[in-house]
Length: 223
Image 1: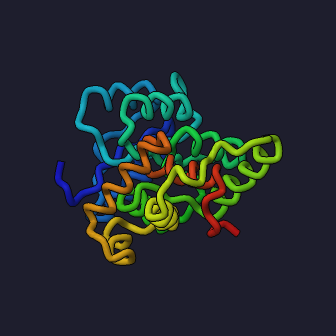
Image 2: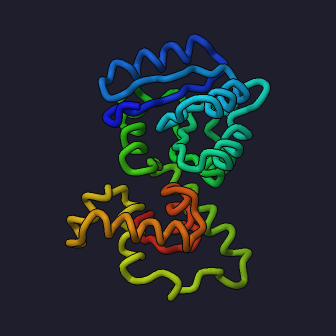
């Protein structure tokens, strides 16, 4: 696959919607849609037999295998794959469920085209894109669970000071290059710290790092 393109697979049971979103996305010269799936089974079969795309854009409500179950399987089999939920389901429980399963972004289907394109590029370049609404829900979920928890499972000494700095910059959606410039270190060093963070937090991807940081109340950027 060409490295300068963002390769996308669309999964949605509505053919008209798939064609419409494909037309919208491919008007951007940076984006190429590799495949359209009408349900989760067709999506998984494609991923198992073809070159992996960069991003899967999936609805939640599909026949045979819905987007939630498909996301579980994708995270298990293709942990590096970035998943964007683009759906009409906008309840707090649906959003939190998909984020906890590892979705890199959650967007309602009534999003404006510019927002969808922006989110795709943010996910590709930075690993995730969470709107303020999603971050608010994550924070509320943290407070809810903390109120029931007698002991925090986070050890302050577990992450180094530098790792905490980098984690916060990642969560504030800075790229590797931007983090390197801010901290006056090399991009390779940033990647090394990020890999250490993934190992220490047992996260599969950058989206997992964000949920870990929110869960353990490590950030102060959420208002």
